[in-house]
Amino acid sequence: MSTATPSPTAGLAGVIAGQTSICSVEQGALIYRGFEIHDLAENASFEEVAHLLLVGHKANPSELASFKDELIANRALPPVVIDYLKTTASMFADNTTVPMDVLRTCVSILGNLDADSQDNSPEAELRKAKRLTAKIPTIIGHMQTVIDNKPLVAPETGGDAKLSHAANLLYLMTGEKPEDKLTHTMDVSLILYAEHDYNASTFASRVIAGTLSDMHGAVTGAIAALKGPLHGGANEAAMDMLKEILEHLDAGGTVQSFMDNAFTEKRKLMGFGHRVYKNGDHRAPILHALGKAMAQSRGEEFVRLFKVGEEVQQIMDDQKNIKPNVDFPCGMAYYTMGIPVPQYTPIFVASRITGWCAHIMEQHQNNRLIRPIAEYVGPPESKWNG
Ligand SMILES: CC(C)(COP(=O)(O)OP(=O)(O)OC[C@H]1O[C@@H](n2cnc3c(N)ncnc32)[C@H](O)[C@@H]1OP(=O)(O)O)[C@@H](O)C(=O)NCCC(=O)NCCS
Image: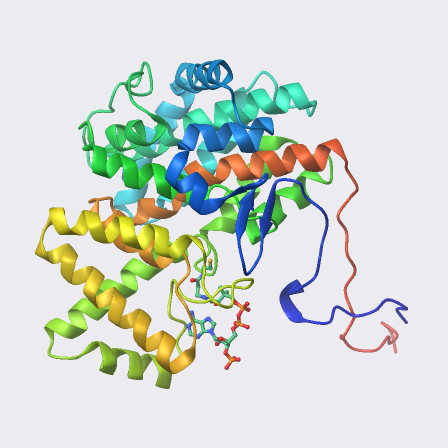
């Protein structure tokens, strides 16, 4: 019989599973290494936040310049990854894969090609983290052009060296230099998504790193964890649900009747609720405001989308006291920007890669194997032959 204390709640809810100096997620505030999320969203760039998370402190101007240069220099993908991406056209056509799965495979291939792949020293891990941060937007961009049956955008360089990380991601996906408003919204969304302590994918990456496995392996596992609709996949699922609501309205229904049906069916409304935040997600209003402002200049279709979204939020709040998480406004904002829905969660990866790598490095620098125990609730012992 086990002498261990059983876990008090399912899903490790409320359990402190370790320490971190990277991020604090609380009802009152979300803090990255001492800086509050509203402050970062308003005053920092994604590159600055990436430096803060990966290197561990706010960059001075010369540190920032060389950090940006390193990211730009590492944007291009190796030919092996480009060749693989080209083969995915038929897989997308046959509906046997989705962008998150292709991104996961690309990261795994990058691990096979990285000169530091088996080196878990802090110096090697920082080099790998920068390379992954630089290359993931290029994977997403090239993948989208393969899906659209268009030529890859600047494959030799991985984009335009004059463009920021956020702008270059949009450029690689479309071949067009984005307007400032779009770039700004993308940049802020990348800041908001970058880090969130022991969320499911980060915890998965720490469990993998805790066995002293390598960074690319830990990131590959984290991508698989992020894909699920209860986690990062919720930004795609939220937009799919909003499209369903718009169809319901076009067929003569109301938002209230859609929600009543959803409540009767005990359906989970995507982009709502959170394991930690019970009074609302600090990131959601920031992205909602930016997306809504952008919608005004993008057309009536998008203004209507935000109106419907706000009605859904009001009903959830009034009838269930459940608030939107960041994935709900993200779905609406990315849709307004014209981004294809299946790329929403890969873009989340383009941001969270910084948080994951920071945690993998932290885990390796003070490692202990993560191996909890389970409470056995199966059949009692019996004899195989009797
Ligand atoms: C995020 C999430 C997984 C958190 O789960 P959790 O901490 O286990 O929360 P619980 O499932 O215990 O929720 C508590 C109650 O609120 C309800 N609830 C929570 N989120 C809900 C949602 N999105 N829609 C409808 N009801 C919800 C639960 O059904 C439960 O009700 P009950 O007590 O009557 O059974 C959950 O809120 C969810 O599935 N949300 C939708 C997916 C999503 O947006 N994920 C992204 C998270 S950032």
